[in-house]
Image 1 (tube, one colour):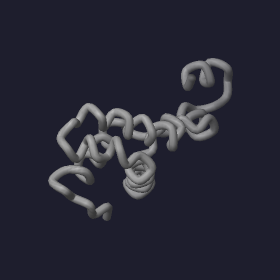
Image 2 (cartoon, helix red, strand yellow; image 1 turned 30 degrees about the horizontal axis):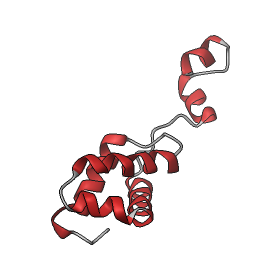
Image 3 (cartoon, helix red, strand yellow; image 1 turned 90 degrees about the horizontal axis):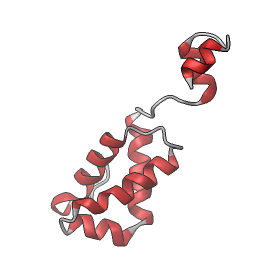
Length: 93
C-alpha cells in the first residue's frame, strides 16, 4: 500500500503510513491494554493457555489484532499473553 501511495504521488513513505494508519502498534502500554482486554474477554481461552495449551494463545492474539485493526506486533502480543498467563501469573502490570 505504501509503494502504491508513493507511485501515486501521495508523498513520502512515512507520510503515507501515517495517513493510511498502517503503522505497527509498538507502544507497549497500548499493546498491553489490548492484551489485557483480550484475556478478560476470553476467560475460557485464557484458562486453556494457563493450563499449558499454548496453541490457544493464537485466539487471543487474533483478538489483539482485531482490537488494533491489524497493527499490533503479533509476536510481541503472543509474548505478553504467555507472560501474563504463565505460572499462575494473574498480575497484569
